[in-house]
Amino acid sequence: MTLLAETRLDTTDRRLLSLLRDDARQTIAQLAKELGISRGQIYSRLARLEEEQVVAGYTVRLGNAFAASRLRAHVMIKTLPRFHREVEQALATLPQVQSIHAISGEYDIIAMLETDDGSGLNELIDEIGLLEGVERTTTSVILATKLER
Image (tube, rainbow, N blue to C red):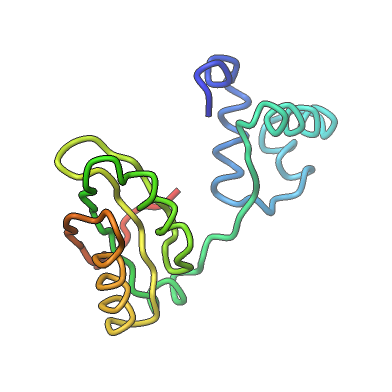
């Protein structure tokens, strides 16, 4: 989200985004009723938010039972000088990597990982550690998710 787009969001836009984060499959009629505006206004707002790239897409959030069956972890990655981009590109090819974030501080990257089990996670962490340009990693397994929007 750009700073310019952020400044154009009014209270209704923010409420609409919040409703979509809770359940992006709500009907236009449900959204209009909840916000107290017409369906046409919802369509217009969504079109504008998509055009301005405030809304980049709609996705699926996993159910608690399925998510609990997955093993997720954050891996913080320290790269060698001038290898940041190459490491990001290599991480992006791994299907178990759910997201990649550039960060400040001692480490350069945090990658969110998701695997079927501990063995798969161990192999993935080893694979990441062997990528050219990776100096070191530190991994934290996610035990429970308390809030996710």
